[in-house]
Image (cartoon, rainbow, N blue to C red):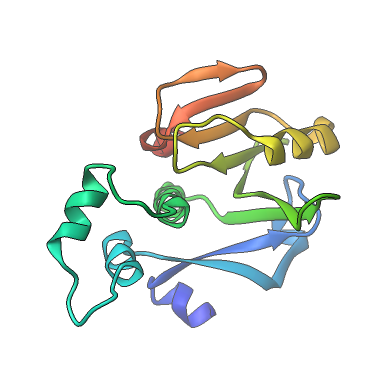
Amino acid sequence: METLRESMIANVAYHADDPNVGMHLTANRSHYKLYLDDTGLFVTLAFWNKDFTENIIYQKLLNDKLEANLGYIYENIVAQMLRAGGNELFYYTFPNETRNQYEIDFLLSRGNKLVPIEVKSSGYKTHKSLDVFCEKFSQRIGERILLYTKDYCQDGQTTCVPVYFTPLL
């Protein structure tokens, strides 16, 4: 896995066992998510269901007409932009009583506070994982961010920004 990271083929996000500003200290090196450095290649591989990828898939994808879960692609894009901005990648999961787990897609350290980030591939603004996480670790939280495909807005304490704002975080 380190070979992939060092070769700049993949970005690695480690699970932060104790989400705090010193996430390197509690990073669980056996629990991680990999993101491909080349998002275009990732899209090609994700939709490669024949000997060649038909142009119609890309046309539908670009025109927002593709019936597919694009969450993986958006997370990959965000991971790539965060790493390009010099950020280390960390994420956090914790149990939920009604479904498997809550997940915070990315955690950034800013000063002495955490900035939890949730990525949504559509325009909806629900952010239950973000809300529960921020309640659980309220003393550690600075800004809380939802990256999605719609316009900038403030939803309570959550700042909702378009995905293309990621380099400004």
